[in-house]
Length: 218
Image (cartoon, helix red, strand yellow):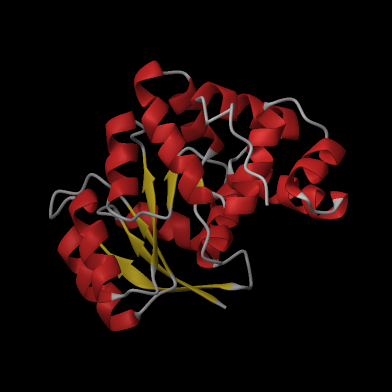
């Protein structure tokens, strides 16, 4: 069971999010908070697995609450849920320890997926956010940071192979692992990066200029 704390200054949004999440029997909503300070207190008291955190709240900024939440509840994963997708907000949220960044306009199924992924200890960004970052040259470092934090070392190595145009067989040969293992890494990284295919993931890595000249060997 994934235990979730919802943080938004609008009770209507909290009710909407709760309805979405409770459509999944593996998710339980522990409660709500309506500003950053209350989110920190409730996270310490309730010990949720995931906190869905709005950024702009009159009673206390969500960005300021990320680090205190993770300090008070070290096992908790903070997912920013906001209408804002500026590269500065994304970069700041990641730097302060956010495990995910999702737009409020995202599809309900995507939101549920992100909660599951982040609860498992991984990091993920909404496809909308990834698309926004790839469209801005100034966001390259944010995109690189996101990719590095989202993927395991092996998934990162596999992604470099995709960006270099290698087939699964060629990546397996380069890394000294089985083709089946490569396929598993590809499926995982495509999901974490919000991509629809291995090709899109490879192009994303190219946009980030992710050390394409270096494919580490085992």
